[in-house]
Image 1 (cartoon, rainbow, N blue to C red):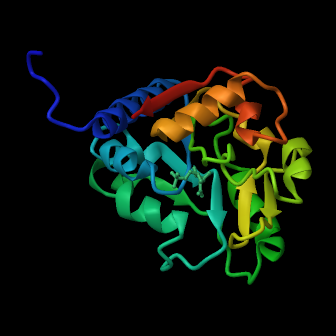
Image 2: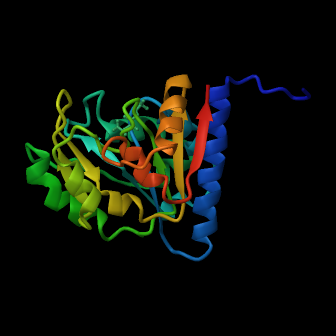
Length: 225
Ligand SMILES: O=C(O)[C@H](O)[C@@H](O)[C@H](O)[C@H](O)COP(=O)(O)O
């Protein structure tokens, strides 16, 4: 193949997703003074976020927030704000404004109101929401075994504090706010997640596999082995 990619399939996927998200931001900047990008945390997005940072656009008019956040200090390796700072907020994208979800409060329950005040003024509907998915079918911090899942699926509030067994306390955008986007992307890799998504597509119980709430809207699936 002429000019064969020297990158791995996952690196190629990250670059393609970055180009698609950059195109979405540019398109909306044609008719909006500010645009909003919502990204997920975890381990998958790093290559995508680094690739996105290298793409030229008017980043000073772009706000970036998170689909969810672990309730840890930004110095903690688990922090999604730290991930964004270390991968996206560099190169061309250094000029983007990041609006984090973690407040100085000790718990997400104490911080949720302040976090909501930060994000509600942003340019909703977002130009793009980039979702990840866990091997249990969760997305953002919408977990099947979280006592707050029902509320996070039903509320029109922007954010919900989430307690999930075995995980640190988290804060998540509600399903309603995650749906407030012109475009939804799902960024997943590996055979297991492909099988989980395939299973999600043949059922409709959102409480079993919360990713299903995003199979009711246009969803650009970016998957590589
Ligand atoms: O804060 C988070 O962890 C994410 O928002 C979460 O929803 C993530 O997308 C999945 O857990 C997949 O994570 P991996 O990319 O690490 O598999």
